[in-house]
Image 1 (spheres, rainbow, N blue to C red):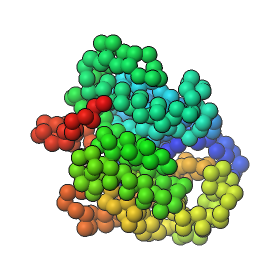
Image 2 (cartoon, one colour):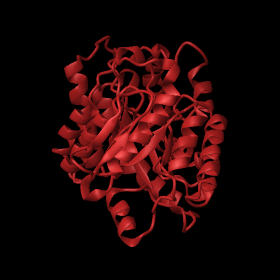
Image 3 (tube, rainbow, N blue to C red):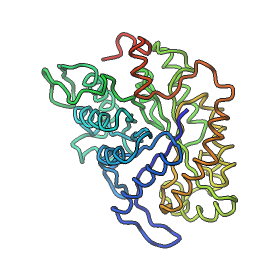
Image 4 (cartoon, rainbow, N blue to C red):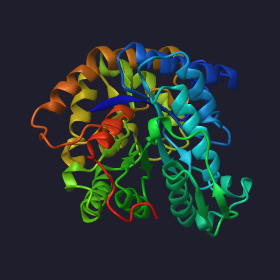
Length: 369
């Protein structure tokens, strides 16, 4: 099982000091968080893709390429690659290039983004969101798997005899997670192709998360990729820790109250009961995270947000230190207990290359269209 950090790269005022970091400071903070995640032994760093304030990560490949040159082991991922508003040709080329630079330490999470206006900014119509996600991803898969592509669809100009360059490293495309918190069509898409499904459930109750994951698992088995228990699932999480829970709550409450997403509605304690948000001690984070298996099953990737909503860099790095030293070692041990032998590990470039060489993990007929 993989554990890591994801960031949305928001620029938010620290309510304790009244200071708002500059865009430059926030970008550098994201790099520092990635390096700290590798230092403490986490497996994954993931960044979002946003093109609107208050977010800064508009170019994930630029950031991840910079981080790749400064790390050696950690997997570099996106917590959103906008499959709807990006040209799939450019996605194919950019992430294959990043895959080569990072020696295979790359995967992607496809998503539709967090803001409606992004569609017209890139010449698209939000009413086509699901259709764009389906068509663009079908083309992306072909670009990575076929040396020469002839293609015609609804949303972009046709391709004739086109070859995307560079080709994926070792002929193995980056593994893809499909991220969605509310769209069953995306869970269906992930299941159809036998890809991963990531439910970034930081703002959603467990009952909803469980239904989405159950749908994905059921359809994954329906399409012949394996049993429902062998489907590849990832979850989000949101934590803020201190040695005693009172200090954590005292420090985080102003961040919660000013949040445009979390604050202004139910009290923080009620919010924590209904969502994965855990504000407290490392032991409380362990207990809450282990409970995710009750509705997600034996899953493959767990990512935590530690820097959103105005958390200063120093505090975010302290969260990562506690995750690496106290939380994740226990989670690795506890999640391994009772884990079925056929429950898959999260795919990596090495495992995908090995599966191809052994003839395992080949896609059933019809999964390239």
